[in-house]
Amino acid sequence: MNEHSHGKKVSDIGHHRHHHHHTHGADENILVAFFLNLFFVFVEIAGAFFTNSFAILSDAVHDFGDCIAIGFAYVMERFSNKAPDEKYTYGYRRYSLVSAVVTSFILVVGSVFVIGGSVGRIIQPKEVHGLGMVIIAVLGVVINGAAVIKTRSGTGMNEKAISLHLLEDVLGWLAVLVGSVLIFFFKWYFIDGVLSVLIAVVLIVESAKTIKDIFAVFLEKTPEGIDVKSLKKELEEIEGVENTHHIHVWSLDGEKNMATMHLKTQGCINLEDCEKVKKQAEEISRKYGIHHLTVQIDFCGEACQGECQL
Image 1 (cartoon, rainbow, N blue to C red):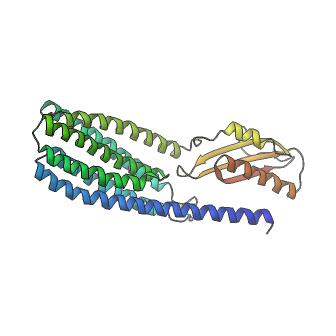
Image 2 (cartoon, rainbow, N blue to C red; image 1 turned 90 degrees about the vertical axis):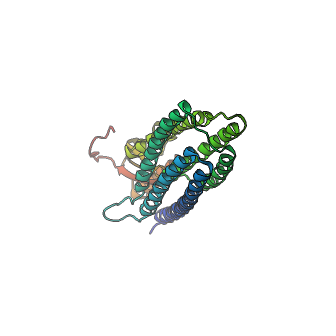
Image 3 (cartoon, helix red, strand yellow; image 1 turned 30 degrees about the vertical axis):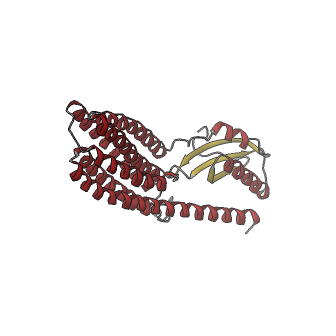
């Protein structure tokens, strides 16, 4: 085994270990968020009967739906950590994106229902126990805020979708807190509905952005921040390379970027020079955030197979 091959294998193993550690952390974060959310569902049900607040009872139902979405996300995140096999040669990472899509759609649907219910509360405000709502709202901000903090640092789309889900709850409870204070002092019962509509609209917009990013991955769009023209230019500055074609860059799961390319040599180079070209191509690609690269060297006199202008 030559030095270059050995270095490449060590690099790949190191990257794999780091990725596995990250996804394992995502599992734990999502599980913690699930139990925090489930615990607060029971707190909300008790609080709804104490305050006679239909809004809090509705949020309890909404949070129970969140628990289902988060539980599904946890199962899919665990499943996505399976190692590559003959059926899924790239592994199962994109299964986590399926969960992120489902979670985001649930968030959109939930927000639409919140808007519908909020409009009714604006038109026909209902009297509620303001002080009790303040207490429940503070608990809501604290418990859901802890869950957001636990998942907020995640880089995976599944974890981001869950974090957005939980952020909706925090913003919702902040709205309830502000509204309950105004209700307690001024009896402005319509405030809760107005704030709920505004927050729901913001969450729909954010969810739409998340869904757009996920579909960009599924459609194998070039990842954000990677300039293919600039990459091609640097590759063609490698000594011995005449031109670069068939450059394809995509992301497996929104985190791990991959690429394939053809490098045509200027003359008939030997295997040692070929290894140098490949090594430089790998170094350049890593600067662009590409950590899994497949290079085909087209030697002099070789005909490139396929559409070489791609």
